[in-house]
Each structure stands twice: as structure tokens, then as C-alpha cells.
Amino acid sequence: MTYPHVIRLAGPWQCARLNDDRSETPVGRIALPADWSAIVGADFTGTLRFTRRFHVPTGLEPHERVWLVCDGADARGVVELNGRPLGEIAGYALAAEFDVTELLAETNLLSVDVELPRGAAEELRPGRIGRAGGLIGAVRLEICSPQHVADLVAFVESRRNDAPLLRVRGRIAGQPTDCPLQIIVSQETTDHRVEDLHVGQQFSAAVPLNLTAWTPQSPNLSEIAVELAPSPAAKAPCHAEWLCSLPTAACAVTPAAAQFLLPAVESPDFYDDLDRRGIPVVQRLPSAWAERLAPRLAHHPSIGAFAFSPDDALRLPRDPAAATFLARPWLPLSDVTHLPPLPL
Image (tube, rainbow, N blue to C red; front, side):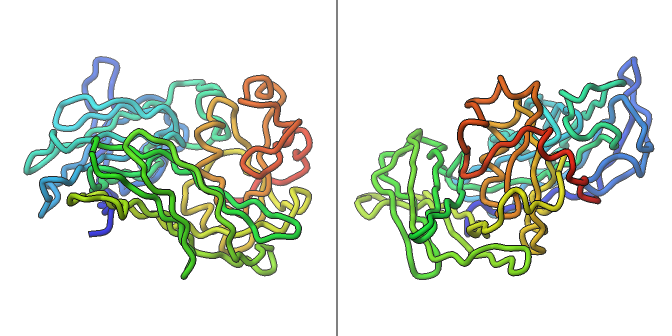
């Protein structure tokens, strides 16, 4: 099995409105991810409880771990599995993940309470004011090996007279092991290895790659693989396996060529579609989410720049006006207000 093995919990989900006394009023069923406009209307505020039953994945090996991943809830959510609280989903674009291996039964009940308070401020759901709330992020199970990669960041730096550099960094996570591990970054027949890694350790690599330039007229993408595996020096059997494929490219357009402004963070599939169609955009990011979301979006060549509002500038990790971050300029929002929002 290639890890992570993904099982999507798309639907149907049962939905009920939570009343002030915490009693439930059923309102229908829905396939996710989606906002809740189809069942309670686009203007609904309050809390909906989303529930779904699922069976334990078959054929689990003793070394495998099962994670529950929720990509986001608008405006926020609370997650329970079989009546046991797991934790919170802090925002519509802030993923939450939970190791549920020890909590699984033959049949399981997953519950997510999603709250959109009346009059919710822009700070709570930046860019989504006027849009319906709901469990808008994908929900899935991920079967993983005992060790995996967390906080993966990959982005391309274009260099004037040399091949583009793919910068990759992340952290080895999971259960401690005496087995030395390695990260392999590959493109077709070329690979670069970072060896002698252990759980808890950060890694970083700068890999020169043969990437064609990405433009709106020729939105070429190359498939990059980032793999976790036992190091050749490993002397004992080791189950560490993890693979992530990232379509990326060297962006050959300037922020001035951007066609649209994205005021809200959208789904991963949304950005994949922009990459394939050759639509350059400027992505607005709120400062409170910038450190988490900018790295997650950095491999998409369609994002030519990030934008911030004046109130956000002082809270960013560095002065965006003085330097690039993740190989992209950070622009004051006032510089890109002439751009129309991308029709959704």
C-alpha cells in the first residue's frame, strides 16, 4: 500500500440544527464538502451538527495508524468520534487532524458541530463574509505508516541564468524509531536525497530541476514526488513509507499580470484547476493564518503574489514590503484592489 491511503467521507451526512437547549432538529442530508445553503439557506447562522457513520477500514496492519483529517469548517467546528471529543477546527481553511487508531470500533459515529455566529466578523472567516457557512473542507481518513512527513512546504525559485530551484522542507513525524530515514525528492529520473533523519527532525533541500516555465498561454506543470523511506543504512526492518506528488512549475509571470484577486482561501482542487487552466491570481491572506496557509499554497504557480491589508502588516512574521516570502512578493491590498474577484 502507498501511504497515505485516503478514504474520503463524502456522504451522505445527516444534518441537524442545534437549538439553544442543545436539542436537535433534523434538517436533511448532504454530501460533503459543501456549504449548508442547500439545506438551511445561505443566510443561516447558528450551529449545525453533521453526523456520519463509517466502518473501520479493513485489513489494517498492526503498524498502521489511522488519522481523521478535516480540511476546514466555516466558521469553526468541534469534532467527536464515538462520543469522545477529539478537538476543534479553528477556521474554514485551517485543517485539523487527529490520530484515531485506538478509538475505532467496528462501526463508528463521527460528529462535527459547525458554528457560524450571528454577525461573525471578518477576522473569524476572512474573505467569506456574505457566503454560507458549513463543513466546506473535505473530511477523510488517512491510513499511514508509523512515520510520516508533516508541515511539508515546496516552492520553486526561478533563477536568471540557472535551472529553477525546488525548495522542499518539512518535519519527520510519528512514532519514534531507531531506523534512520531519508527524504527523496524526485522528478522523472532525477532525485535528491536527505539521509540520516529521525522522528522530530526538520529537513530542508534545494534541488535544481528541469522545469518548463508556467504562463497563461502555456500552463505547463511537472510532477514532483516527495517520498519518506528507510535510509540505506537501516539495519532492521522498518515500515516508514510516505509519498506526496506535487504538480508544480516555475512561474514566468509577474504579479502585474494577475487577472483576479482571491479574497478567500479556496479548496486544494480549486488551485489545481487554476494551475491547469493558466489563470494567474493574487491571493489575499489574513495575517493570523499566513504562516500556516502560505506554505501550503506555495507550490501553485498560479499564485503570483500574496496580498495583505494594512491592519495585517504589523502582525506578519516579517515585513512583507521589504522581502519576498516563499519566493513571492507580498503586496499591500491597496495595490491590487483594481483586480476583480474570481467568479466562483
